[in-house]
Length: 72
Image (cartoon, rainbow, N blue to C red; front, side):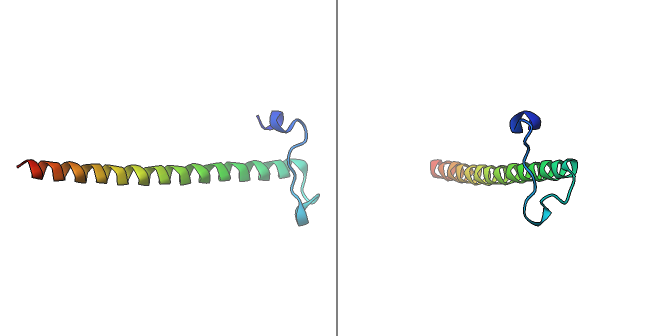
């Protein structure tokens, strides 16, 4: 997918690293950064969804407990 996406012109390092590393090394660094970014994004989204689900479950359980005590 990487080579298809960039069609022979993959992203390169810039700034003070421009041209200092081999093409292969740059590709490894860019792929590594992409992988870490994706993992962090997945972790953040999973954490947010988990917190929302946990809060919803607590709210539902609290309301269910209130209804049970009102019925007696």
